[in-house]
Amino acid sequence: MRLMPSLKTVFAACVVLALLVPFVEDWLGRSPGPHGSSKGAAMAQVGILAASVDLYHQDVSAYPTSFGDLLQPPADGKGAWNGPYLKDLPADPWGKSYRYRRPGLFSPESYDIWSAGPDGLDGTNDDIGNWLPSMKRSPLPAGSPPTPPPLR
Image (tube, rainbow, N blue to C red; front, side, top):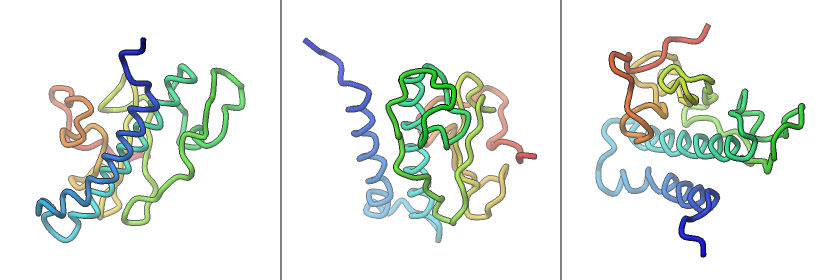
């Protein structure tokens, strides 16, 4: 008898919940400022991307090197790739690409995924990433800055 739901069942539930975040925020009136709904949508998409990376990791026993690995099997053929893990790579609500870093600055044992936010600049206070407390992934390491430094 199976007592725990499969990871794919949990993933499906996360996707449904993530897609509902912007609507619930609007309904509760928790969308301050002109970018409230867009920020909620970005948080939902970061959650979906993170769940896709986690599924890839479970199947392949390694983290992807880029988001492209979620769409195409690894060239080396390692692991039991069961993708594609995404239909396509979404742009953030401001038309920019989501960022992925492995190992992560905020999650060195895994990865960071983020949107540069409305200003389109990495490392500013409007960045929306999987390390933020509102994403409920894991706490920030002590003494960490609120956002990663710009990529160079």
